[in-house]
Structure formats: C-alpha cells, structure tokens
Image 1 (cartoon, rainbow, N blue to C red):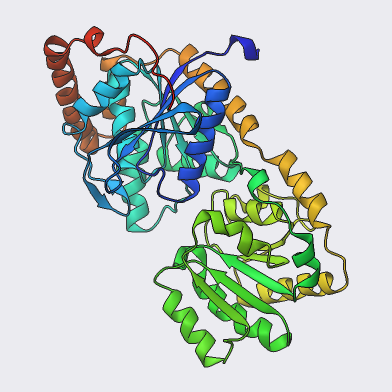
Image 2 (spheres, rainbow, N blue to C red):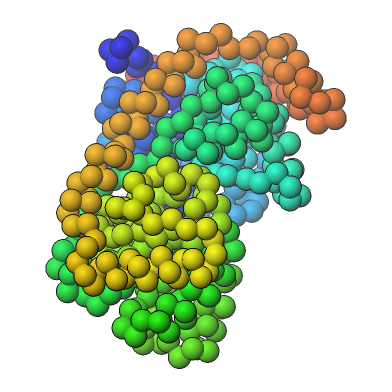
Length: 437
C-alpha cells in the first residue's frame, strides 16, 4: 500500500515553529523531516520571529516561510483573513501545494490557511494538540468560533490520543469517521539515559514544565514540602517558568528547602536531557493533557514517571512498570512518589537502558510520518466539498456565526477571483524545485 501513497506537496502551517520551543514546534519540525525522507515535498508556513522573516532553509532542505504577520497574543497571529490571504495564496501557488496541514487549535494562522486553502480547492488536514473543557467561557468561545465552524469543511483531522479524539469530536460536533488518532513521538536518540548518574546520584525527583495552573503548579507547591518532610534526603529539581514560580519560591523559603529544591527557571530544549539525567523519578502534575511529551522524554532517559491520571496520559506509557498514575490529589501523589522512592532505594526500578530501548520502539517519528501520509491519501481520495457546499456547511452549524463565516468566505472567494485575473496562478508556480541549502 505504501508505494501508492504520493508523493504529495504539503504545507505544514502553524503560528508555532522554530526558533520557538514547544511540543507543537517539535512535532512540526520532525514530522516535516520524516515526510521529506518519504519523498514528499514539504514547506512550513509560520509568522516571522524577530529578524527571522522571509524564506529560510533548515536541515534536509526544509523550506520555511516566515511571513510578516502581526503577533497578537501568546505567539499567535492577529486573525485578518483578507490581510493574510494574498500571502498564503502566493505561497500555496508558488510551491504547488496539494495538501494544507494546520496544527494547533490556538493557531489563527492555521485556521485561516485551512479556510483559504479549502476555498482554493486544496485538500486540508488539521492536527489538534490540545484538550479543552466545555463549561468555562474561553472553552465555549473556542469550541464554537474555532472548532465547530473552522473544522466543518476540513477533509481529515488528526488527534494525538483517543481521549483527545473524543474531546475534539464532541467540541467540534464532527463526524468521527474523519477523525484519526496518531500519537506524538520524540527523537529518542536525543534522550538517552546516563546510568552512572542514575545509580550514583542521590534520589532526585524532576519536574519540567510551565509553572502555570493548568500544569498543576499549585499541586507541586503542596507535594514538595510533604515529600521532603517524610523523606530526609530526597531532593527536587524544578525546571520551567511562569506566573506560579513566585509561589514555589515562597514555598521553598517557608519550609527552608533551599538545599533540597533547585529552581532552574526556563530551560532551552537542548538542556532537557542533561537535567533529566540527574534524576531517577519524574513528576507530572498536569490538570489537563492531550498527550504529554515530557513524560515520554523522561521515560526515554530511564526515569520512572509519577503522573496525574488526566486526559490522554493513561494511554502514553505502560502503567506500573513505566508510570504510576494517581488522581490530581496532593496526598495521593505524595504516596505515589514515596513508593517510587522506596523502589529506587531497593533497586526495583526498571533498568534505564531497557526502558529507553522500549520507549524507542513505542514512539518514533518515521512511524508517525508513515501513518500521517495515510491520512493525506484519505484526504486526497475523499471528495472535497465545493464552494457552495462549504457555505452550506457554515450555515448548517447555526445561523448566528454561520452568517459571519459565510460573509468572510464570500469576501475571500471574491478576492481570489480578482487575484486570479491580475496575478494568474500559472505565473506563480515554480518551474523547478529549489536546491536545499
């Protein structure tokens, strides 16, 4: 079946990409590299980062368009539709794009690209990397304005866990048949154990993540002093930054734990392995999580993971041998950590090299890329809705926001026709593939 797939010309689109560091950025970069190795033509479209604007080439000849869009909030661009449309149209035509693959619910650029590309007759795929609730105001607005309307005309959708799939289908009122599950992966060769430190270092518990409410920073504030009180030698290393860092600093001061709790602040991704290698146990206190890359990175480095039982986390690693799961209750997590510490001291934790080898087989980017190209094939082979059918799709979702989306779509169609006259598509297409630099 593999030899029948593609090759396709693919645009991976998101507000979140290198040089920014994060799970979505890492996912797009490694997915692009593996798709290129499979013979596909791949470009990445994102917004400019500081002086990084225009066209850049990354390793393996990966071409990246850093477009000069305004960043509105938290790394996401200001949604403009008409302002971004000529730029995106130009890129899609220039690169002979067949499939637009948008990433992240939070990326306005991804959703604009899916809408514009769909109206241009291109095939569209979206990957959802997040979990949302249904009750709070921000979730209701996101679910209605973004997911329900933006994804109604997308050809195929990918989620990173089965829990995430159920969440996305419910939030977006989507047809489950066009939603697939493909987990994240990590480059396990970059996350290898250090057996000397694992066995010789004092018992060390690592936390790496943003110090925000959603990542369970408040839980961490309660857990750390209780574990330290019940075990006299265990130490913590906390990496990450955020609004809750002050509370952690105050906790360390209150309980006089300066010698046992090390606060590292924000870490570049290339230093994560170095920090993980200093410990034997990893704690994840997230209150919501679609997949959680950090626990896979920790397991790849040979650490035993203690985590909250939330979202897609129970699907990620084998329970007991690789990960201990508890409800997001401080006392329960304290008991789980102390049990893990006892196992470490009795030499009952799984050998770090065996754990790394097992994780390498579970999660690897070539496998993710091969499964993703099957989704691309489905998108290409499925009959894509025409412009009138797309307008009806918006109307069927509800007359309120539906009319808004229909008006925006009509404006895009009008300008696409104008641009087709004054800037013909044939004039934009590259005659040959540029050489990688």
